[in-house]
Length: 442
Length: 49
Image (cartoon, rainbow over all chains, first blue to last red; front, top):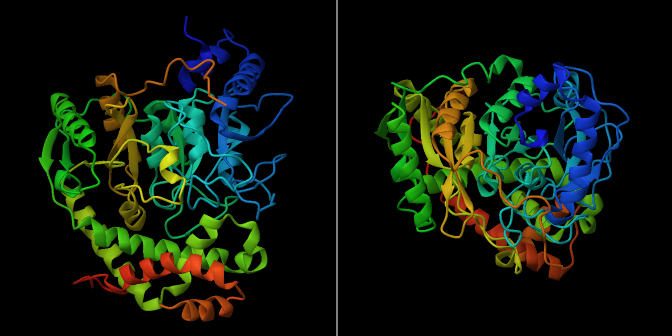
């Protein structure tokens, strides 16, 4: 019999409502599993000890929260020695509580959602449950590790350049970056406000969709689950990544297989072209770094030494950018949004990889930050919703992710396509085994 | 971009760094500035949309 902690959120909630499971017992069992498993994962930076479950349709169930959000009774560190904040809970946390989900743990983040992994933060980097020698990706590092490690069925993250989607891909789970502005971000520390998005990571599409619908009911993210995808057209942006020297051959194989499976499910796959990637990534970096500099400038001046060295060196790059650079970058962003909107007139979604490789090793970062190739940042510039779903494994056994991109406000359609794919392939909705306990060399 | 120019920019923000730290920050700043200086100008994009 499957442990209830390994069942989707709605399945457990139904059993609790029906009186077959106790909300208090599930909450207690979740805490116990976290205490047992997390020492190997290092995903949790603060574990709460609530006396009672929250009240609501998901009473007894829990969710992990990236440590950028203020949560009552827990410190907010943002992964930094420079931060000791604790403000009132924002709308997202209040909506989770109102649904009955207990924000049981604060989860590791790259420092201020910027750069990582780093070893001069208050907590050591979270480890990839598929192989603890490999990074989780970030910046929602603890959120991805906690979900893939079975601590939670879902966690809250933020995505400014791929920080939900890339760790979801590296850890073999689902991550949704909703349309910019869909989920209220009050009570969460900003990084680059015109890119920042709050969203869920889930063990499966359904869990991620359930949490997104709680966070933003207007998305109706679960309402198309279970529907097929026959007749839908999906634009496969294959030329956008296969010629990139950083693209791992296993990623090309996995994405081609993904397109084939979607086709077998009845979707029409059309190859589409998008603008050259490199200038888009540069434009995204310019806007992100300039906004991050503006957010952090005063705190940097007051607490320079308290920032980690990679974070502070990253942030000062924004100081050299001019208004003209930002204007040029924003013009490219507008053109790209129009281009993607144009493609989405003909296609229900676009298909790309999330990252161009499986998760790198920690040892690759010993000499400092390493640029990891992805296809995520342009959709923070354009604001389109994007979802990463597990799509296979590299030869080294690490998971890979496919990214689906949709029209603004069409998260439910992305969830529908992703779940149809998930149900058709054993690569999805699979968590690493053995998972209890995970062992780790000292 | 030189170390002196970066130092000037940071001092305007109230950040005064020792030379070693300034030198450590310089490569990233130069890298991003070079990329930004070579951004293509988008044709047909309006500034007011």
